[in-house]
Length: 169
Ligand code: FE
Ligand code: FE
Ligand code: ZN
Image 1: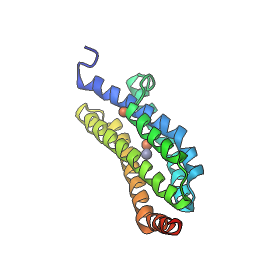
Image 2 (image 1 turned 60 degrees about the horizontal axis):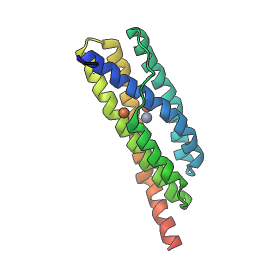
Image 3 (image 1 turned 135 degrees about the horizontal axis):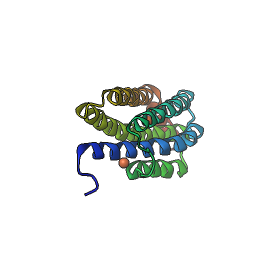
Image 4 (image 1 turned 30 degrees about the vertical axis):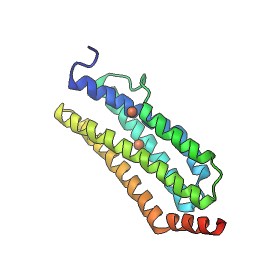
């Protein structure tokens, strides 16, 4: 049995998140390019910076455990980003594409929130208090990113996308 206790499961899920963050780092520059609304572009740019910090935090946790963060591929994130890629290849009015990008990005944030919430709770249980703090910080940032996207969608981008649809009808 490879994973015979909670600590090993904790490390596996940290590796999954490490892979997820690395994949997001690869994907975000493309989303920055595809976004039209300046505030959406900025939100993606900022999250790219934040993601680098989040990966550093995971590296810190692995260093303390004397383990490597690499060696696992997060298939969940691979699938979410593949769907995002698919939508970016569609021919859409820019405002509609912005709405699609927000939708894809919020799926990513929610996946991360689920993962970080779990490992944060396990870290506490395992007495890894420093790691729990770092994971909570990242969890808060993912939540903030999600809220920013909701606000952008609800205050302007969805309405602009709706108008774009009417014009082309
Ligand atoms: Fe992240
Ligand atoms: Fe995963
Ligand atoms: Zn994120």
